[in-house]
Image (cartoon, rainbow, N blue to C red):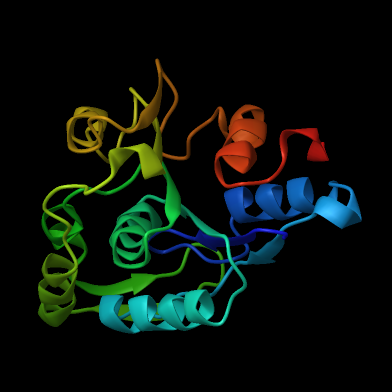
Length: 197
């Protein structure tokens, strides 16, 4: 059975992001017989709507399902992996977005589409409601962080995902500069057979 992979982009990002594009290219390069089914949804701006959107994809997908999330997408992936018992790869994930995104209250612009959108107080309440206080099965998570992330403190993620598989790389930034090099490990963890490449 071919796995289903769902990539969740970050705040102000889109399916046109560099990481989403590089993941799509890596999957397309795999032999067709072992190529996973890949979904890269354009996430709704409301956190609860985004979760409902991805939940519908999970519930309609063939098993096994794995989530790959970057930044805010990592926060969403964590919530959904706990709800559905799936694996999740979290890349420089937000651990407390209801705090970290406070400076972005108001009108923001999507970095890829140029589309404006409104960040409201209600969004922070929704984010807080999605928090997973403690991972029930840390071994189902693969954390990738870079220590020079200029947006989020990587140490918060390292502590929160204690017991998970972790790759902590010195330097880098919030975009995660070592992403392409780690794609084979990400795909293996997500259930793509090691000999698929």
